[in-house]
Image (cartoon, rainbow, N blue to C red; front, side):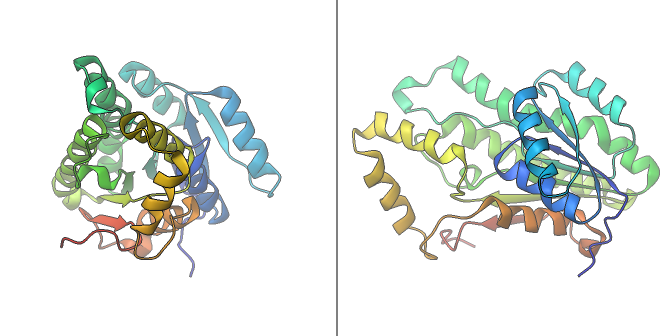
Length: 257
């Protein structure tokens, strides 16, 4: 299926590794002109080399998107954006006894405001041109309360509401906004969550990991490339009537409708 993305300018935040890198690669294979954003120049250079070894070329921009002015400046340098996929920022999982107002603020800065700053920088320009697609990779933690993910879960819930609000506000002006909620996906964030669970429970990491996988009906964790495939479709004209949707990708773990 031709996703009709050739020549479109796509920005992926959090693109130096994990789901973000997989999204950058998928978009590049589809012919989009990809700009990868991350805080770390070193990680971006490594990602750029990794994709170059596959014959893919991407542009990179190192910026901390928690800084609203820096976010605005980098998008001004990039110019008109057709596609934005947000995958930057991860609120650290924290045992409840370690929570503080500072960690809660940090969770919102890391996850919610990085996405909001990027959206704010592009959505009005998309509306003026009458075309644009935004995909926010959020997470099931915004729907299912977890005592290790109170700050991050709250940020995820806020992102879902804001995403659907933007979708409704801009639907008549040619801009689509959708959400993907991955469940357990094989990235470095799994290890971070396991470390928090070990501190909270005192149980071995291997035992906790096996228990997590066992709870997934499909019997395995997801791969970043699987999330990227859905994100790329949602960003494409092939999904032209999809907006304001929140798509779960958790191997069948969610029991509510």
